[in-house]
Length: 288
Length: 215
Image (cartoon, rainbow over all chains, first blue to last red; front, side, top):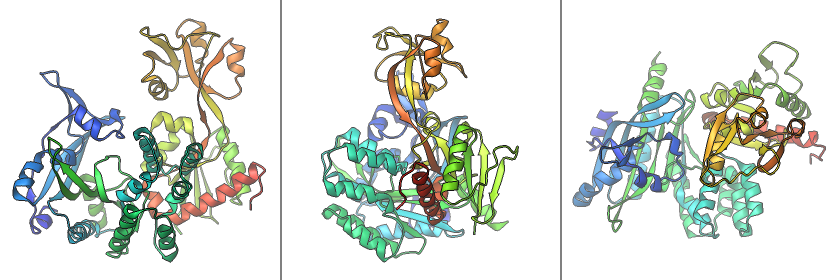
């Protein structure tokens, strides 16, 4: 993997080990707190053992990328999460591309993800945050309501989502889209027609047409507009890669904005990470 | 065609699931009187694993089973990373805080002593409301307030007869619980059409079982 990305001009990067608890929790409200590995520093500061690499990159790479205007990095690192057995170390490999993100950059990243997955049968599921954000712009929802709706969508819990839409005073068109949301996946003429009927504004229109264009890259790409990430910083295309022999995604990524410490400037970025242990295990199985 | 593997919670839920599958035209494959744990439907290529209710979501999350039939109480307590694809709307009961009549739940600074089999659900319910002292019990939680071990209990209430027999009442209804169909996240992608077809059949079975018209 390292040779593959070095050949494409990506440089190595080592992200910091600790994150500030408060900052991370505000940025990622839907990530369960009990999954985070919390530490107390000598100065009584509440810290987290690196819960995610992209959040660390957003802080550390921003000044460099701003200076260089463009920056392509890769990392081979570890993230830490609590689970039932204790603290879990997850080895991750990833690439991130900062600066001006053109359509061609998005295509390059998708193609790299496909290359790294392609030795085994796989699915690369792809969606766009603009679709749901555009839908939310059609109704007046509080932050808590949006988080609840996102949680139900993440769980593919159509029945509870239906009950929620019936109970809340939403525009008829928004209710219709939410009721069809889990059908907005797959391929074919009928799906495109259904998707087109669900477009309520320019933001949703751009999201749908971008994804339909990217779908043409490979038959292994599956469109899903109900795709939701547990981390909230994505802004644009989002994707997840799956092998059928694993019980969860092996690759995840998407487009996001890096925000400067003073919150005054932003920079576009796109990247993905791979669960290295799971990926290696699958490649070894394939050669047996 | 690949086998579709489905974990079914043993016991009360199992009987209802069997009736729905039968109504859905998927036959009566699971023999509850047998000591076997795996039942195969060769025609529809479905393999049923009959497991303890608390283990269903584990089988599904790990990918050993593609789908599972399980109570919402188990899902809320375990918070496994699985999809909740259908509410079967049977096996309904409520999660409730119960105790002796007029027991005060909001005690301010003084911690409320709560006995329960469901520590996660209880903790998250009272999180921003009342400081609690959690007393984890494996069963017969109704005993706890009677012997002074706790102020209240949090438990599933179906008919309320056990509460009544022990002089307890529902102090607060927390949420309604019913049976659900869950799916492994990867199976949902790789077997999407197959799962969708199964869900359509189960939906018909559910409607027929509930006595509604199918069409």
